[in-house]
Length: 295
Picture (cartoon, rainbow, N blue to C red):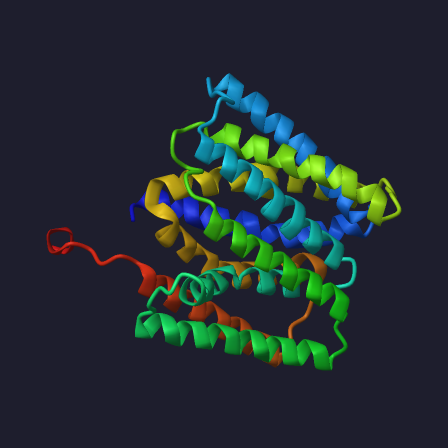
């Protein structure tokens, strides 16, 4: 993994983790699904315009269209839609921790559904990761966390796991920014239908809302997704997923700095255990380097 890939991975993890805090700010002054649909519409149109300016085409391959539609539904409409709704009652730090378990769920599903054999380090990391989640959940449930919001976060990360496992070919054939823009528009179309059916549309125009919406649209929404797609193309999904182990740490730190969210000792221990578990799983899943490459 070269220096540029490492820089891209760190930038992605930081931008992606910050989205939970900005989402928490947004839903304080606007209905979650409507604001998310509007964000996807703006991000998607910008992505398509930028892609056309870069000479990219919307004539995608069949695999890319499949990936675009699946990610638009599972990642944008379900995963982010459920998380935005949940963060009306759930802290941003908890949502970030739950979302960061996606690599663990992918590893578990690969074992259960696909029959992949886990290396001992991966099995140990899987057990450690879920043990860390259990520590955090036990602490939060005991403190009176909203179980409905918690369940939405869990369903959301399962949807993201499904998209990650089901999609292949999204990063082949170029047109990276076009893929990003179109999947945003798929999410926008679904949420613009779902919002008036499931919530009362409200917008209380404040400076925190405007700042958080602008930041979320341009940085986690457009830039982070573009960096992620390029990173997948550069180093592959297995190595790229390693950077997800930073999400619980970054997510909790940003929420504490900007929202004043506090962590109990059990939360801190759980975050460390989850982080170590994700890292162990990803290290174990990395393909062995050829002898010549190691020398």
